[in-house]
Length: 83
Image (cartoon, rainbow, N blue to C red; front, top):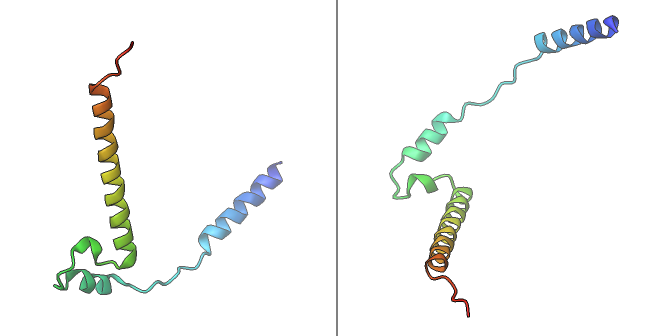
């Protein structure tokens, strides 16, 4: 049991200390140019098609939730008459 723990400790130390750092390209300046250019598009839609899709989905869910809440309030305001 102790031998297994020591082996595990050795493997974890080796894994952590010898991991190579990944080099990623810095895309921040490109994104800054995209979002700062004055082209008349709202900032929440400048990301492309995925932003437009998320925006429309959010608006549809918001509108649907508002309509549902108003419907439920109306149903609670006018209770059914019992015969």
